[in-house]
Amino acid sequence: MKVLPIHLDLFALIILLGVAQGIFLGIFFLTGERVRSVANRCLGLFNLALAAIVGEIFLNYTNYTFRVLWIGDFAEPFNFVLGPLFFFYVFSRIWQRLPRRWYLHLIPFAIWLVNAITWFYQPIEFKYNSYIDSQHPDLQPIHADLYIEEDFTGLRHLINEMTLLSCLIYAVLALITIRRANRLNVLYPGLSSLRLLSWLFALVPILIVIIKPQFYRDVGDFLLATYVSLTIYTTSYLVMRGSNFFRSQPEPEPSAIETEPLPLVEPKRKYEKSSLSEELEEAVLARLNRLIDAEKPYLESDLSLPKLAERVNTSPHHLSQLLNDRLGVTFFDWLATYRIAEAQRLLNDTSTANLKIDEIAERVGYNSTSAFHTAFKRLTGQTPAQFRNQITTSRST
Image (cartoon, rainbow, N blue to C red; front, side):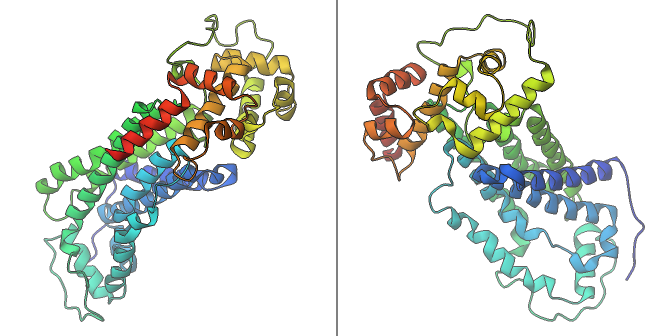
């Protein structure tokens, strides 16, 4: 067997850093309090799958595969889990749950995982031939006796086409989910980030169509891996831009209010005339985010500013100032935004959609149904009944 020297260049560096960042993001979202969110779990697994696929391309591109032939094509089954995991992430980020019968989306991955045994359990000569056939077609193959028949599905030669189709289908489903959330006026200000990631993911099948015909076999995969690494960097940027990116509940923003706007806060520069330091505000905001993720205190009917301030270890004055300076809302407006977002989720969820309006009002923390109606109308421009009817109509079309 001929072994080629290691090949390292700028593309290899970008891809390797993408692998490392993908693994970091995967571990980040799958540990600590973040793992409680189903959306975070989906995003963590998605990044680990990306890291595995890009990692295999790195090994192939740099010729390291010659040194580790025994793990050849180890990431191929993950081609069929990328699309479902990304769609699960977008769906659960908006609706706080997985789509119905989500497990059916993983059947192609399960089939390919079983099929992978037929090329994992093969002699090293077979794996050498497979590698040079895809990456170095100029080299001569060697004789190899198969242990078992390769590829019981007979579809492995169509792996690129099937990967393209899978990514395209789930990118479209993710964009449709975001569009539906927009149409239903769902209070989730992170839609712009989700839309950006969805379009970046939708470009993958387009790049496959463009790149694959230009290269013999799979030697152009390094370009796809470079693009995927850049999307991983983009995700990292969105995460670092603010902890609110990976929260399980949407955060209130002034822009989320469409009718009867809340009283506007006088524009001012960040921290101007503030008795709170930047570091203290960040610490209090982080504690508030963790409390919201873990306990959903806004659902408590007796929640008050002093009670919430005590639970995040600050004074009512400082918490009120934080909400005004950083979020541009008063405590009561912040509380209403979260409660109405939860009510929208209950009205949309098929397991709770049949609850009476007053029952939903009680579940989200309102003692008065009329107060619930007023807040819902003010924040969404619809009554709860109109919102429910719109969902029913949308599902029937």
